[in-house]
Length: 179
Image (cartoon, rainbow, N blue to C red):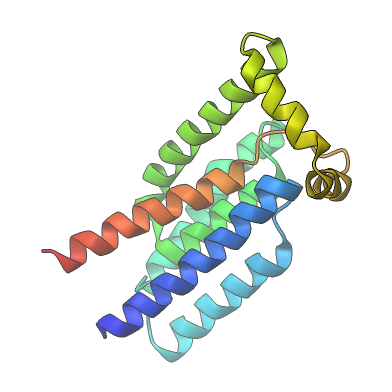
């Protein structure tokens, strides 16, 4: 049973890494990755009676609804992108409602640090950040990323939620293993 838990945790981490990279670089959350996670989770509920990381079906469905309800007002106010809302709801489906608040808090702190560094680099208050940004923009692979990103700007919030989810699940897994 413990091997299955570790393999499913590894699968969850890989999924979060894919979300992190895609959102951080392209500023999009691919629906294909979200639908894939939903399909796998629902199949696990039906076949195994529990989800990918051990979530009970009622907890997963409650987490999905809670995640959607929590972020939908922010989306309506244009403070949150649709991909971030969908991703948070899918995290609720995968992990249940009890971890959504810690994920939200940690992800928001990380996004806040990103916003602060971004603002300072644009304001001229830290010349070293401007130099790093100029060098980054001169790299061919980064120019390709900017082309793929298009006009999408903003904080890659889903990326930080994915990071926070991995941290929270890692701590949860360590607590289970060592208690």
